[in-house]
Image (cartoon, rainbow, N blue to C red; front, top):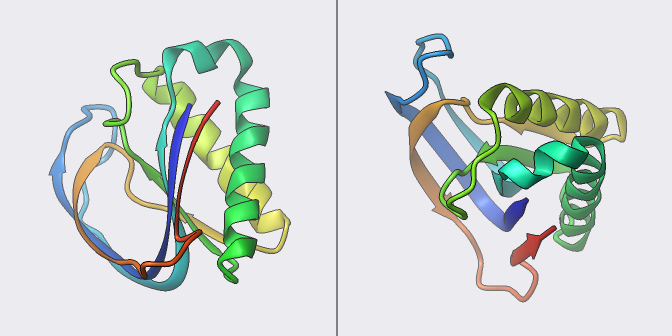
Length: 136
């Protein structure tokens, strides 16, 4: 898994182009303030240990959220960090479980629309831990 975490003063998005046949078609836009955005690439090798990868994902997101003094976490599928891509169904399931775990732990977790290219507006401060990359 590749994980790019960016603390955002504002993270705004709107659906642009649907790029997966398996997802429903709809339009959505949202703007979230004071949030940690996790740009997540689930790789084929992660399919062998989804539970372990999920645990590392949740731990890293919680750590970075605490460092940036926020309880808002956005899970964003970002299949541009590696050439290797996990199965879409497994990726969606992992995102759903991670969101549920984060919410149960007292965070306000949400996901961007899966299977869509999005118009993004990211306002991120130039602070030390506002951008962190992890690979596991």
